[in-house]
Image (cartoon, rainbow, N blue to C red; front, side, top):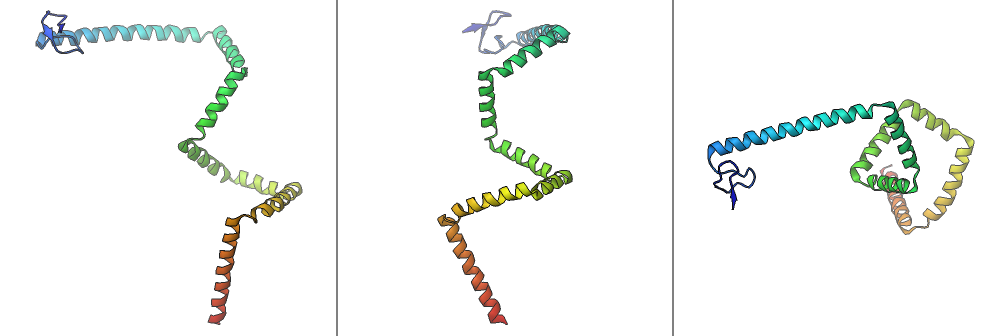
Length: 166
C-alpha cells in the first residue's frame, strides 16, 4: 500500500500518489503543473538551441554531405526500394496514384502530346507488331473463345430479329 507523499496517509490513487484529502489533491495537481511547466521550459530552451545550431551553414553543409553519401549506400537503396514497393501495394495509395494519373491525363497538353506520339510511324509499327503477337496467344485462351462464341451468338440473334421485323 502506498502512502500519500503530502501527509503520509495510505492512498489508493496510484496516478497522483495522494490520499482522498482535498488539500493533498490540490497540492498534487499544483506540483504536477509546476513540474510540467519546468519540463516544457527546458524542452523549449533545448529546441531553440538545436534550431540555432542547425541553421549554421557549416552544419547544413555537413548534413547535406552525409545525406548524399547515405543515399548512395546499397543497403539504403534496398530499404527504399522495398519501402516504396510495400507502400504502393496499399489500396489507398493505389487509389491516390490512380487519381493523380487520371487528372494528369485529362490535361489538354498531355492529351495532345499522347495523340502526336501515337501518330508516329515507329510507334504504330511497334503497336501492330505487339498486337499481332499478343492476339495470336490471347485468341487461343478458353475464356476468350467462350466470350467470342457468346458475342457471335448474340450478334446473329439480333440480326435475325431485325430481319423478322422487316
